Each structure stands twice: as C-alpha cells, then as structure tokens.
Image (cartoon, rainbow, N blue to C red; front, side, top):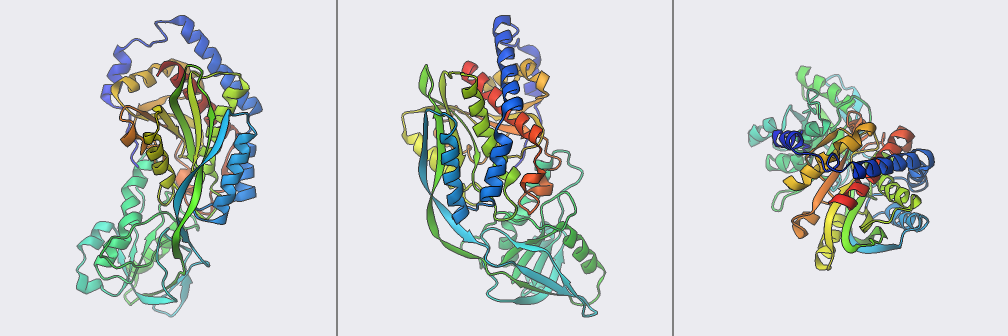
Length: 465
C-alpha cells in the first residue's frame, strides 16, 4: 500500500485556517486535560501488553480457517466481555481455508554437485508441487525482465525473481508497495511464460534467514503453478551464484499445501453505546487473523490490543461517548478480507450512520500520527488537532490510507472518514509475515503509547466530527 506524504493543499489548510481550539480556549484546555488523562491511564494501568502476550502465547499464529483462528475468536469474545462494554457479540462470516501442510523444502545443486538448502515458504494460496519438482532454474532480476522474456527460452523452467525492496525509499510501505506485484502476480506472470514454478526474494528490507509469506493470486484460464518466497539472505546468495555460474543450476522444490472449502468464522464486536447519537458509529479495529508463521504479534495482534485498550481506557475514565464506539476484531484480512467486506455489507443494510473508522495494522512501534482517507473538511479537522497531539509527538497527520479492513466501508458510506494509525515503520518489514513476528519483538511502552494515541483520536472525533 502507498502512504502519501502530506500534500501542499493540506499545508495551506493548516497554515490559513484557525484551529477550532484556538478559537475556543475552554475547549482546548478541556481536551488537553482529557488527552493527558488518557495517556496517564494507558501508560500506568494499560492491559494491552499482557493481552498481547495472551493472544500470541496462548493462541499463537491464527490463519483464517484454522483451529487456532477459531480459538482466537473465543479469546476475543471472552476478553472483550471482561472489560465492561455495553454489548459484545460475534458476527458470522465465511472465510477461505488454505493450509501449508508440512514444512516446505527446496535446494539447488551447483556445477560441482554441491547441494545448497534454501529457507522457503509457500505463498498463501499456492498450489502444491505434487511431490518433488525439479527443473532448471532461470533468474530474472526484476518482474519486468520476466515479462519481457521470450517464452521459448524459459518454458519448462523454475523462475527466480530476485528484485529487492528499494533501500532508498524512506517510507518503507512505499518500498513494499512497489514490490508487492512480484509476490501477488508473479505466479501469473511466470505461468504465462510456461514456468513450472516460481520463487521470489522475500519482501523485506533487511538480510535475515527467515522467508516471508503473504497472499498471491491466480488468474482464470492461466495454469496454476507453485509459488514460494526464499529468505533475503538465501536470495542474495542464490543471485550471486546465478550471476557467476556458467553451468546449469537445477532447483528441487517440494510443497504440499492445499485449499479446502470455505469455513464459517466470525468477526468479534464490542460497543460503548452513544448517549446522544447511538446510531452514529465510530469503528476502531484490527484483524484477528495472522499468517501461520511467527505469532502474529505486530501483524496484527498489536492492532487488536490497540483497539481494545483504546476503548478500555475510555471506560476506565468513565467517559460517555456521544456516538457509539464500536471495537471490531476483523477475521481474514490476510487472505481474503472477508471480515472487512462482510462487516461493510451488513452495516450498509442497517439503519446506522457510520461517520468514522480507525484501523491499526502497521505494527506496535512508536506512534507517529494518523493518515486519512477522507474529504477536505475531514482533513481540516484532523489538522486542527495538531496542537493537542504535539505533546505526544503525533506529528504525522496527513492524507493517506485507512486500512484494508475498513476500506470496504467507503462503498457503503461515501462520506465516512477512514483513519489509519501510523507508527514508525523502519523495522516493520524485518518481522512482516515471517517467523520474527513474535511477542518478544514488541516493546511495552511503544505499544501502550499507540493505544493511547488511538484512544485520543476516538475522543476527539466523538466530540468534533
């Protein structure tokens, strides 16, 4: 996904418009005091870190359709019930069911007959190899190189795309977005050229031995071929080998992943009923599912506990919202987004007015601010919070992206404001979709600062949107 930097228009709005708070010093003092209370409560008494420990250690990885995902639904329902919400319930959805199977294996043989094992993971949704698959390996430095290759020269081979994420990009999600098509569409590109399988360099900015996974696509009418990612460390080594060898390199790969019929699952929802506009909804959430490697701590256990803690803090402070605050634990963001799509569809059929949604799905690192998918009026409002957010170093307030789970709401409520929580992203792709995404990589203070930041935004939107 691309997260744009603040635009010139936004700067002009900020510079030329008087803040609603500068016009009303009483409101500013009241709101400033409330934000201080929110941060104090979360930093002193916050439950997010221990809740995340429970989710990651008691449940672990929780891919949609798995027994662990079913456990996570029960965990979420019970945990939300323990925090004094007015209402807690499950929302039935249907999710895809793909399983990795036994550990993938891959190795190549060099011209001297030496075997080199690779750290590899099937991409989510890939077909199996149906036993060991061996073929000559052909190397492409970029997706464009693959697309420009002559089919007669590469047909029947296994393709290796070594394109890395761009180290020069300061915004790491821009670097990720530029490389996503290699993972998402690489199997389609390779199959059109007659490949037997495709492997890619993992999408990460650091060199480490852990391969990453993530969703990929097939296209109707195009042969489905196995698709996998190898670790960045192995990709660098393999690329050097392919660039210097004069002989034929053969790759052996074996994966027995499988797709099953869809399964029933649930979003888990809790509400604090609004005192003035109970049918006006502010949604805050993250996704309960994760990939099946690591523990889903940053992606998106952090978003789950951020959302729950943000609301718990308001309850602890005896804050009575004007609008209904709804916490949603979405299921199946990673490989289908059926939780987000179903929630939006059902809400569109209701008589509710959804005025805003906030998503946390970029990890539990130090908070930097919020991005907005909305109109000029909503952007002006977000920027008017600048002075209130300054003491908490929430300085990145910008036009941008809300999140995968909440984006479908836009098709049902055209004027809804979608906010994405923006933490520091420089370390995120060290853990993204790989075995590094475990509880131990999460810092308690950073996590709780994020929850307090989201709670503060909920409070301000409830009063001024």
